[in-house]
Length: 219
Image (cartoon, rainbow, N blue to C red; front, top):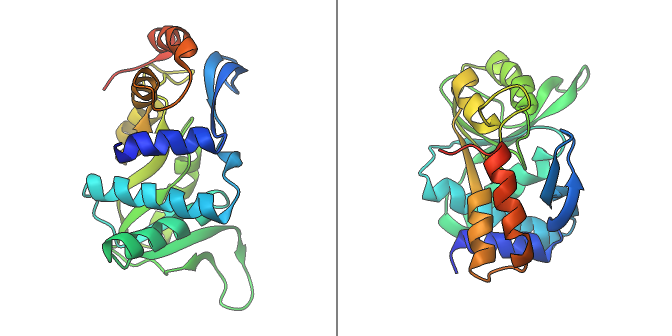
């Protein structure tokens, strides 16, 4: 089993990847749903960090610091930093932002590694729907130092058109911000895993492919 197939089974086992009839925030009716809120134990988080680490290594993403946008990105960046060290002996920094700047003590917007010019930063997030989180954190990062954002890593790329564009959020991030987004898996990987019996859900394949033909993008 590849690490991608292992991750898809992990999502299903955690109740993160589910199949059925779902109304998404966009209003679209989808036959599958990814609920990352169902990662909720130390074991889940430790395993999740390993998959982020594998994605970073597989894609040879240059990294000195992992940045986790508050709040959901914070434990993800920490777990990925731990996994890079434990699995590959890579000692990388991590940092995260505060929602509001601290005006006492050491002050500032960031906790953890204080960023410096030219530092290679990888942003760690769970999913990417509209690019809103990236749009919010980029000014903060660039305002702290002229960092080199070498990529953003997410768990699942739905490979789906945005509401106001024929591009996916991943494509738009590259075009608008020059940030390449890497995903541990894509929806195509998930469909293949179902077809190959890695996870249950063969009865939903036709609906998933129809949804892809309506809203999907290819790259």
